[in-house]
Length: 223
Image 1: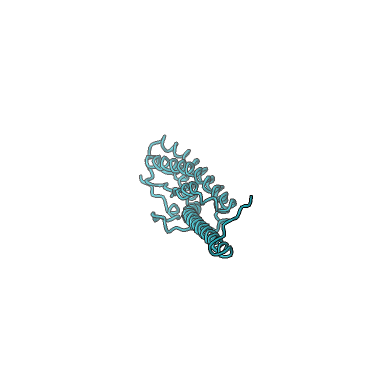
Image 2 (image 1 turned 90 degrees about the vertical axis):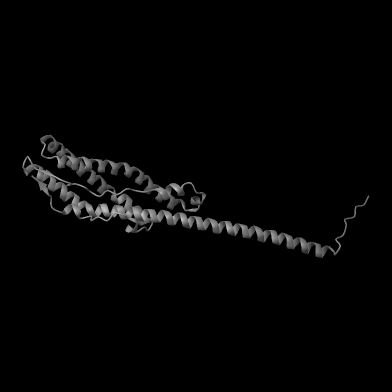
């Protein structure tokens, strides 16, 4: 028994030509779709990286401010120690210790971690981001502790005409010194990683205007 394939109406050459055009069209469509997806991925990566860099530039400005204020904070703590030793018993200090300890933000990182596009950021870069933001999470707690100590010290100094409060203030001054020293030991961790990412400080988003040298001013004792 013999089987005969039907011949195309316009011949095999035309048939394969038409099939080739269809296949080529499909391939072009697939390539275009992949190109659009890659462009979308690159756009998302660019947006994620931009958001992370902007947030970390703001964070660096906050760390730079605190580092710049450290010398005056040490000076103020020394001045408070001297005041405690020499001030008359009936005197006290009003608003004597208010270091500016900035909040640390991580909203951009929290959003980036949920985006599939972050997988297209190099592993090395992601690890640097992750190490920075892990440290920021830890430092939120540490800075809260330091703020709480400053608030308590300020309150004790404002009631320094009471002997027990003046005694308790001495302990708070010592704790404040430990907090400043802890921050100073950790600056290198942040700044070396920010330098590795090429991130410079951007203070344009800081909504509070304050002088990092404020604590270098004289104490105002009230008798």
